[in-house]
Each structure stands twice: as C-alpha cells, then as structure tokens.
Image (cartoon, rainbow, N blue to C red; front, top):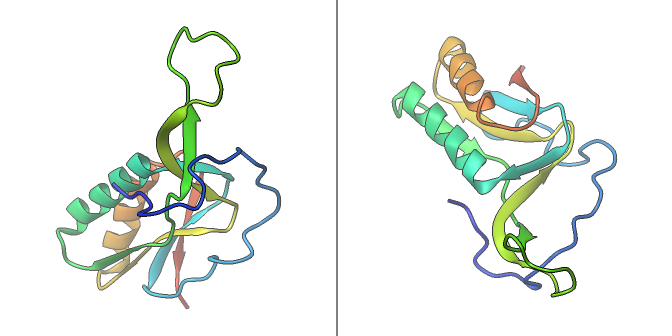
Length: 135
C-alpha cells in the first residue's frame, strides 16, 4: 500500500474540499484515463484494490499510472474512550480528490480492454468516475 516516507506533521486537520481540480485534470501519460466526478477521500487500500483489479484484467499487457497519492493522515480513537483525551493515533492515509482529478491512466492496450479494466477499478472507489480517451 502507498504511504508517505516522511511527513512534516504527523497529524492533520480534516479541512474542506471546495471547487474543481486546478491541476492533475489532463491526461499526461497514457491514452485512457479514469476521472473523478465527485469530491472525497480515497484511502490507500481503495487505490491498491483498484490497481489490482486493472492489472489483473489487462493481464500485465499495458501500463498503468496512478495519478493520486495518499498523503493525508486520518486519525481515530479506539472505541469507548472518554472525551477529552486528545486526538487519536494515525489509522490510515487518504488522497483528497476534487471533481475533475485524473485518478488512473492506462496505455498500451485497446480501448475495449481499457474501458472494462477502468470499470472494474471504478467499483472499488468511493467516488463517481468517468472514462476518458485522449484525442
């Protein structure tokens, strides 16, 4: 799974996700892409599950680029802990995604195979997505 090697601050606040994606919205590497239509958090586990689904379907034929990285720590306190004992420990990492962000790119396969592989990957993700083809 993807996690940061080093962080400046161990814990982060949740924050807001206003507006559209201002970067990472164009197809740069492959011929096909999976683009987010919603905003939200995508965990490292969900990214890995989607990557595995795509890789298995294309049978290691093409190439896949993961365009998002889970760099935001999410904390949680354990069950039945009373209020006021501080912020919990880091549980997992998430990637923040805005509408328009390209999540995955693929190249070296036909459009039919890429579309089906991306469809399988989209089932693993908590945001609505759209399949794109580079002109």
